[in-house]
Length: 522
Image (cartoon, rainbow, N blue to C red; front, side, top):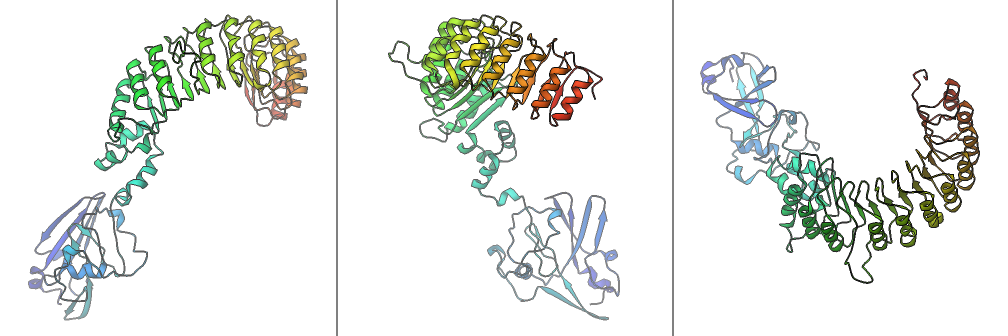
């Protein structure tokens, strides 16, 4: 072929492919592009490069059939989206496939897909790139370039496995991407854990919308796959939403509904009655709750399977309500009654009577608790491992001594703000509870003598808070640092500690994080 022949160039069909970004193409047919070819030059595909733009001019012979190119380069999905970044990777096999799509199996007069052109200066071969039905294939022999959204190649089952790593809010967001995502995310396997957070979200509306979509895929209108529901960060629920949840999700095991002041005893009764597998319940800040009852009037009442119960800031719970809760929840292991200000020593006596497996208990900020309440809690014996009586200012050495002697497997004790606690109870605690790992005695009447006894008897101590302990000096801190070398956290804020005590901790406790208020420490 004589490339200088303008007559032949006029009869030539040139197709321009413009690729901008991924999956966007515009094609234009030109009758002649004289400036793109030069005489006496080897044939090649002219390329015009612009910033963020690529234009490829592909020579197509009128006598060349699309089927020839497809036979050479193999099957390719006509509907698959193409992007520029997909035109850089060759086929891993390096072999051409002989099969072509049925829609292109029209004619194949030539077995070779290489166009041969004879010119006056010799014989040249041009490997034509074939464009068919929106698919772009590179013209290099033995190379196949395929593209398209990767998610289109995944099965629904595999996509469900990927989406299992997302929480409820993220699932709702990706449902807006495309219709396939919207259909896949409503698989029941993705909604075992429902998490709704944020003050702008209505808990009732969110629960209703989610359960409507999930229950529409079941025959009985229930969602047995939902096991955990968490509403936090200001997302509140009312009786209506909680009753709907109880009715539609009978297999729920974990529920957290915080600061939902509109939830009442009736909704909670429906929950524990219908959700018989409930094990974890957090109703922090539900001020209307007074008790957790099951089938009132029935003797003996049905026992709940609750093992974790958080009633923090449930100010309406009294001693009588605590009695009902303890009687109906004999399997409790974790019980938190922080700032339940109506609870007294009379209510605490029901806990060891019914909840004999209790390991963790917090009655911090329960201002009516005294040493007599601790006498009752001491009946739990070695089972009790965690106890917080922080800011119970009526607790003294007498109560802590009984707790220390009876609950000798204690691992965590918080007596912060109990100003009547002194070295006497700390000495007994150190000798009786050698397994102690964390201790908070901030603002207690403790001195260096108590710290020395603690350091010598509890060498495995990990966390210690001495905030606002005015009687502690460098000597006590040095004893703690020397004996408790595994210490990880130490709070000495507002203490009379100098740089010597600070350096002793840094010397012996290499991994210890020190909280202090002295700007001179470095």
